[in-house]
Amino acid sequence: MKKRICSLLLTAALILGLLPSAFAGYENFTAQTTYTPGQFTDVADDAWYADNVRVAYEYGLINGQSATRFAPDSSLTVAEAVKLAACLHSIYNTGSADFASSSPWYRTYADYALQNGILTAERSDYTQPASRAVFASVLAAALPAEALGAINTIADGAIPDVSSSASYADAVYLLYRAGVLTGSDSTGRFMPSSTIKRSEAAAIVTRMADPSLRRTFSLETSTELTAGEIYERCMPAVFKIYSYDARGNVLSMGSGVIISASGDAVTCGHIANGVQRMVAEMMDGTKREVSVYDIDTTADISHIRVVGSGLPYLETSNDVQAGDTVYALGYPGGGNAKVTTGVVTDPQNQEYLTTLIESTASVISGNSGGALVDGQGRLVGITVSSRGSGSPSYSVPISVLETLEGSAAVSPSVYTSTHQPDASICYDKLYPVPDFSKVTGVSLLGSTKDRGTTYFYYRMSDLSGDGTLQLLQYYAALNGNTFYQFSDGVFTSSAGYLLSVRIIETTYLGEEALGVCVSGIASQSIGGLVQAVDFSFAGICASCCI
Image (tube, rainbow, N blue to C red; front, side, top):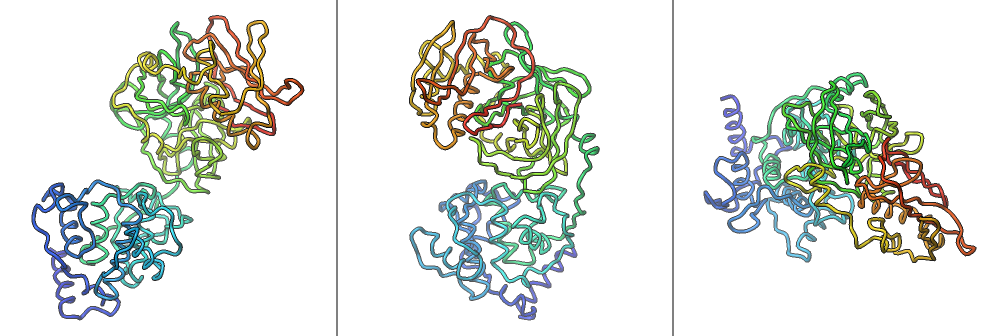
């Protein structure tokens, strides 16, 4: 009742023109068109956003994607966010949103936004989906600060996934305090890296235009957990994982982490690719069978399922900022559970084929597939590699999991049988060893054969730069064809192919050369842990696979 009375009082004030001058622009937001019930067939009358869509449409702020379709679950683009902000600003200040047509269509809105301080610089991503962080930054600049007065007390640091150092932090806190944004869950998480749906945009933009729709709420200040608290809270969801070949021999041991109570989990791609069976050993010692949804060998990540229900799991977060404290959890060396503390030094390291989170958290062999969590214990990445000393370490962002396919989990043996190595990139008569030339485009200098080993030589000067790119490309191809460095600098197939690969620095016909050595091996268990990959020629020291 109190909320209803407040809303009526505000409406009366608008009608009578008695609002303070700071709010004078709000009377300009009036219905410009009529919304017919059922106009958008994909907006149900009882949908939480139905009234917001109606108001936004009537105010002339958001149209449908067609005459009958609103597309509430579609992502809003950066250009559409800029248009909303430009319209809000123009209506508030002039009473209309008359914009000339342009090519591309958003150019006229972008120019207006640049001229009026909504955008501080030209953007190159107008056609891309807008992240929540971008949307908040653009919308917050659409109205004067005094029109977004605080109705909520939100202390600095209270929004758990918005770092105070983030470029968008001021905008997000302004909109939280004004009651325009309310968070995505009970803790008030903003999820800045997530895209924003058109339904959510309708709710936010109508709260911008109509103060009576804004929400009052409170958040407790977010506090970082200690390493001990991280261990107690998160480690039950982190498990050892054993991979086996067709004979039941242990191929390798790594770590994994559960992300749902029903057993959805993640580990490294090299733990799962080409194997016949996997078993998860939980922190309490219980063992559970593991099945596979999909594997991305380039990113070295695998979406798996641990058999069971009601399992301990970690929530995930896509928000990682430089300077954030993070913790790496796993079973280094195949021993006891361990947590190490570090700081994010680069949340988007671009030195490798996949964007990685670089941190100072130490990880070594056996940590493969373990959890990288933030200060609130949310999973932000999967540890995949490190330098020889264990730090810096590199983790695949958990967001990469969204790109994997596979709607049903199958046994590792079934997955292996239906995902054979790519024959089109292999050396002739040496399947499934990838051909360095076919993978990288570097021409073959020559080849020799000696006592069961074939040597392929490539001129060092033909590699681009310091050769890092070609090495990474070839390493990814080896991974894709089930070859991993299990021991002694030799790549061996987890699927049981009786060939091994070694990469060396050498000379051939008097020239410095990269050598790819392919040898036959006896049929025997590989055994042991996946060891460090250490390429150290031509000035290259690549990260190790753990």
